[in-house]
Image (cartoon, rainbow, N blue to C red; front, top):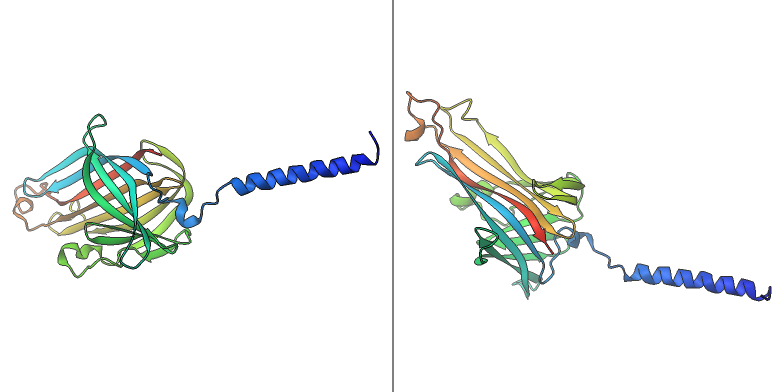
Length: 254
């Protein structure tokens, strides 16, 4: 080989490698942070195993029902404020072999500053950006807490914890997640003070990278010490609660 052509050949190989590397880097889609943990794409779905709980203070029983839910990003639209938004269809079935049935609809808007989700006439700020450990916000700021039926939503301070860490929802382990602790409130304890009214409220959601919500745990019950079932001096161990709760575990997604 001509010694004069060798440097030119090496230079050509160098630029070919650089060009190929740049081309491959350009082909890798860049996922923005506000899209990473709750991707809104038509056809995106997540299937959950769901445990629903009801505390019935009339019959003094705790009832747990199990079923499955599927969240599917079904359509896009422009909301009343002119913002691009998405409709998430919620379907339900009792067992995996059953046919899905229409259950509910959720509306989602991601502004790049916050993720808003609305259902059953209530709107919540599920996430804010940027995502940072211990960052807080009033997630229920849009909820009409003057309505006595939902006044318990007042002043919930959402907080990011365990940012970027793995999370095991009890059925599937997800490698990179962020947890939103929404409320953890306890007023008195019937086990210790059976003659005192009590309230327990807990709510958190975990979001997986590229998936969406992979876990939800919520429960709220009240304890009325003066209620007939709880006011039997001959049976102080009777404790009847009133409330509901749910645990959702993502088990499949696309």
